[in-house]
Amino acid sequence: MGILGIGTETYLYINGLVVNEEVKINDNKALLPAPCELPFDILSKSIKNDIDYSIAVLFGKSIGSQLKIIADNPKDLAVTAWNSQWDIILLSAILNCTATWNLQCTNSIDNITRTSTLTITNYHVHGLGGESYIISADDVKWIKEYFINAKPLMDNERFSTAVHSSASYKWHSLPRVQLAVLWMGIESLFEVSSELVFRISLYAAKFLERNDEEKALDVFNEVKRLYRARSSAVHGGKIKGDLSVLVNESSLLLNKLIKKCIEKNELPNVDKLLF
Image 1: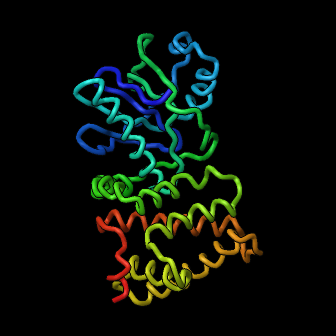
Image 2: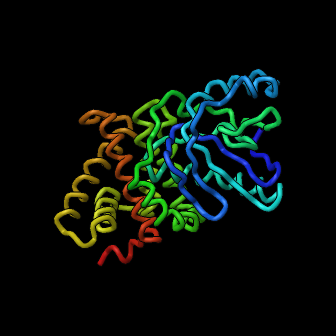
C-alpha cells in the first residue's frame, strides 16, 4: 500500500531494532521505544484484508522501536515519511543489522485507539524471526553526533549503493550471494576498474587507518584476503575458510567504511589516498 500522509504525525513501526530511549534524528524525526506489542484486540476490526492482517500478526509481536515523524500538513507528512525509509536503511547499515518497517500507524504503538489507521507499508518479510539489535549508549552518542552527515552523502550513488548493500545482504539465503552483495557495496566506494585486489586493499587501508602504518598494513592484508574469497565466491570457485565467517568479516569491513565516510563527511578520494 505504500506510505500514507494523514494529519501531521505518523509512526513507522520497526522490527529488528530495539531502542530504550528517545533518539532524535532531526527536528521532525525521532526514534522511540516500543513499550508494548501491537494491540490486535483494538485493531483487528479495522484490518479487513486477510493478507494485511497476516502481515500485522507476523510483525506486530516483535516491534522493537518506532520512528515518529511530524510535518505541517498531510502532503508534507507523506513525503517526509516516504523519505524516512532511507533513515531506517541507513541505521541498518550503520549498526550492521536488519531493520524492517512493514507497518505505519497514525498513533504510537502505546497510544493506539479504535480510530487509529494502521497500514502495511510493504509486503516483504525480510528479517522475520531474526535477532533484534539493541542500540547501546555508544550507538546513541554516535547517531547524535554523526547521523546528520549521512543524508547529504546519500545523494551520491556510490554511497547509497554501499548503504543498501550493507542493509540488504541478509535478505539473501546463500552466503556466496551475500558476499557478492557486500563487495558490490565496498567496490562502489572506491570506483576501481583495474588491479582490483591491490587497489581496493590499499585504498581501504589508507582510508580507515591513514595515520597508523601498522594498523593500515593489517587492514591491507585483511582486505586482500577477503577480496580473494569474494572472487572465488562470485566465480563459483572453491573457498578457503568458513563462508559464514567470511560474510561476517566482509559485512564488518563495509560497516567500518560506511561509518568512516559519515564521520569524515566525505567519500574516499582515490587520488588523495595515493599520497
